[in-house]
Length: 265
Image 1 (cartoon, rainbow, N blue to C red):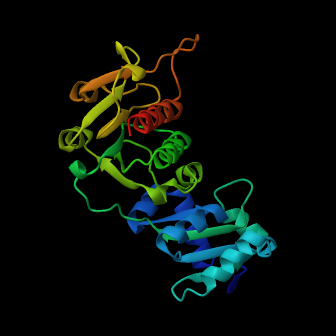
Image 2: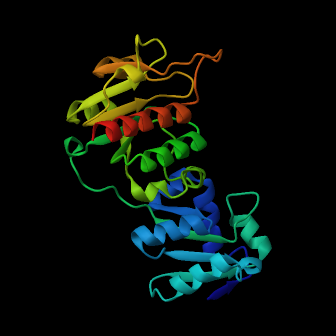
């Protein structure tokens, strides 16, 4: 394991750029995982990361020590130990976890849209926490693929990765998509959620091949996308609030499908 003491070391500069710059992440096809849970999830799905960086004061924590020993046997992974001060400089969170990994962004499976049976389409989602929560719910509901419009927040940013808690590695995530094309290609029912819909989520059949569309936090699903779908539904809200957070709405919809599938099958 290489011990780093200077902030001028190339790996430190790379970590800082990866944390701060979406353009740098995109150009290099790389991103950062923060924390033992994310590193373990990635390792289980794809194998060892490109680089592993350990905080000096955290190296003997059981989870981190176990991961370090496991990954140290992989010949293609570079291991680094840095001081607490340097780790704080590179960590994307205020309370550092003690371990960071640099990974190549996994590419989604090359599969035609019509071959998927359960999809989520996201239009202009802006908040990393919302996107991460939606991805986490999607993975838990056994969604096959997630399609993001070009104006969504970057799915592989450190903030989204933390919020999704490893869900990325169980999903086929397609970014910068033309949602109109995806709707046309999908071989099943496509449903959007809109506040003014006459039909509620609980009045529609959600079994079989299905795609849900969820829209921007402030504007919802755009009119052009809504018109392209076969069905528009609303989530009943008997309380006095005007709308639901998009991540909460997505979880309700996804697990209503899970519920209906469990009853029918």
